[in-house]
Image (cartoon, rainbow, N blue to C red):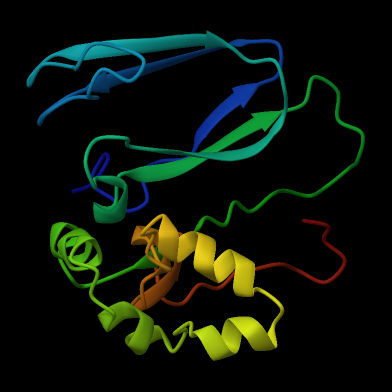
Length: 177
């Protein structure tokens, strides 16, 4: 899955005090009743909201495991007034990636399998919890039948910067970025 042909999706640029207008044309299924009705296949929906702050953020899908499949990107909101001079900016969006089907990952986690704990080397034991003074937290989690890991804790195959395993940022001596 991709947005506009790439992972991550495009960086969206806005200015503080303005209005964000994002047109989403859905070629698949839509957002499942979180903040809006689903966007029907083939339809377009325009998200519109006021920009009240500046900074760098990210956007991602809330439908099933689309985020883990590549439906995410960055948002840059420039401040009303620039306080610092720079020669330019670089947006670097960090993400993790598994070659495994995200639905299979979730199924393995829901089964209570210890596979990812072993693969990541982050197993938790009563002895380890006692050694760290976390025995109460360990037993509370066990009583709630909460696994030690979730979908964001697996052993990932790659860590990406702007959708790539390796990235290079070019600057010239004396530049501020």
